Length: 380
Image 1 (cartoon, rainbow, N blue to C red):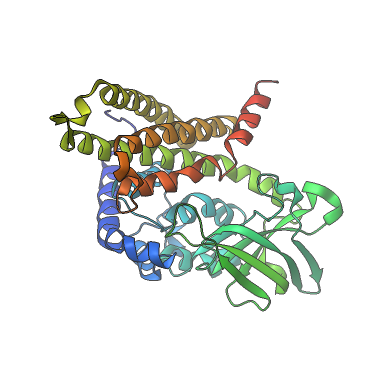
Image 2 (cartoon, rainbow, N blue to C red):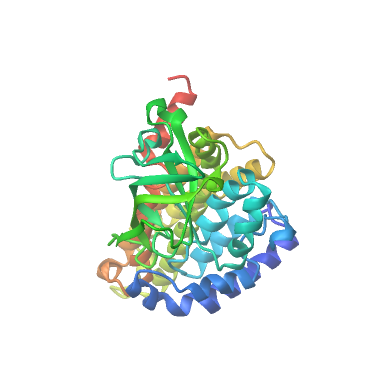
């Protein structure tokens, strides 16, 4: 469908993003999937190309541009080129609100230049073995000891867990205060007592390092507190709409990539003397997928503009994340079916898209949590 939300500047940015992915990422797909993580060189190349932290102020290396359409372009081109593993979405969609809105001038000067250049890779450590979507029940603690915080606990399912140089950790600074006792504290690479656990062996997203993190009496400066003490839960809630819309964008982009691959396959693959796309069952399936993607594109583009214009609500973001991730899964699963046995062979990109996309219905809040949020907004 013809899209109307982008300007010429966005189109130029898209060309830059596509060239970066094709040059620095696509040739390394097999290597990164085998290693379970991407190379730091690819992060540095993204920084050099201006593809990280463009919304940060120019004095720290950014461009001072706050416009989620650029974020959407990054996700769309990552999917369109078949790029795997590099968590630029986390670095650009999820981390910036924390490092822009909650940091002091001293913290900005200390951390932002490295983030923008790609030398400093970030992670957000929220989930724990016993607390995923229910963040108010985290058990990792941080106690004040003079001019330091001492952190004890563990985290899991942490994207960039192995590569991260800067980890925003959700801690209980007042365990008796429930969600009002949660604070955010930054832990930096090399801190004594900070250990990386297993690199998790996941069903999909094999090239993206996802790990367990452990904190054994980790002492960090008191100045590493992010935002206000005891306001961490609220800080996290404020940032979730952007994260959830980013998941919606990524889900839809993956489904569009799967559809494009399937259209090619349905045209080239023959059975019983004709291309398989000409069989009514397949033709109807492709028509259904195209209609769903058209509807999704209008819906998600509308949400993108709502965020750009400042009126995307948490309920709207939850609904978009729910609908886009569930619909993308329907489309991708049906596309894989059309490949027959080849769809279950890992060397085919459709198989990887299918594996990688499954988690979109889980992270950022499960589909069931999204339904709960939307349901409550209806007064139910």
